[in-house]
Image (cartoon, rainbow, N blue to C red):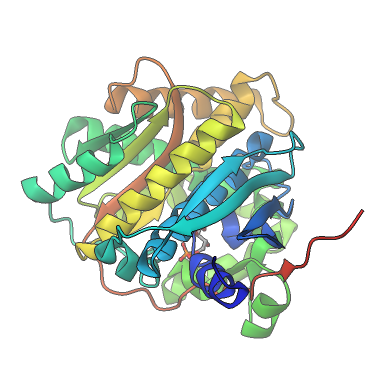
Length: 353
Ligand SMILES: Cc1cc2nc3c(=O)[nH]c(=O)nc-3n(C[C@H](O)[C@H](O)[C@H](O)COP(=O)(O)O)c2cc1C
């Protein structure tokens, strides 16, 4: 039997999981010997296509719960979508176990998105092998590492397209500013991304504040500033040691959750080895939306560029089939200026019906 106190401790540590725009789309209800995980549909953006970003975050959270449970002498058995309702993500039952993974456990509290420049140093062979072993442990998920070289430049350009669209596309600009939190009070009141976690330099910060105004963003767009933003982003991403492309065979919600679990293990292993990581998921998710026939809010040219960017990522990763679950840059970086704030988890008693 596991106590409720211990379940609370496990959940309290597990919520340091990554989530799109730090949306933290989770709440919990106790059940006998466990807890049920529910989605909170906070992230309503065009990037969270079919809630796939949420599912990746749930996968990362479930992996954390399992690793933390291991540290405390338990294992977590998760049954996905137990009732068939889309918002009821998993039923988690704890059972006694004796197989802790202390290396990954210690990395959970240290894992962080690092948007600083990296050193450009390539990954050592043993580092690469360790990541590939974890990333390819499940046959439904595939990890490819794209090292510096020709394909690397293409993938960097593909990722940086998002930084052009931020200024050029009104829906994306509006979305971005809707999730930015300018003060700690704002960040504590509503989940989002604190501006300091973006790691902008002083001149960039000034510009960024100005682009909150639609009229200024439009003017900047007219004089070609989006291309300057893309170039700067490409220079930043180009400081990475390598790019990671994680893909999945299927595309059902459960596949994204399974892939999210592997993604978290890769990130934790990278953290344990002293590496920094930043997800760059915007382009693949926008491309999936466009491929599904939803071209709302993107121009013809933008749709074409987004699809080309996705194809460049697939080519660089030698991906003939499957769906991109995550693109991320990895390398050696100094510690980030600020960590994202995590809300205390909502854990309730089950409502009786
Ligand atoms: C599905 C998903 C997509 C993400 N996409 C991006 C992205 O495109 N760019 C980025 O800088 N961070 C991205 N992130 C990282 C989140 O913004 C980050 O996890 C969140 O702000 C919490 O910060 P933390 O990872 O430091 O805990 C993504 C995370 C997830 C789970």
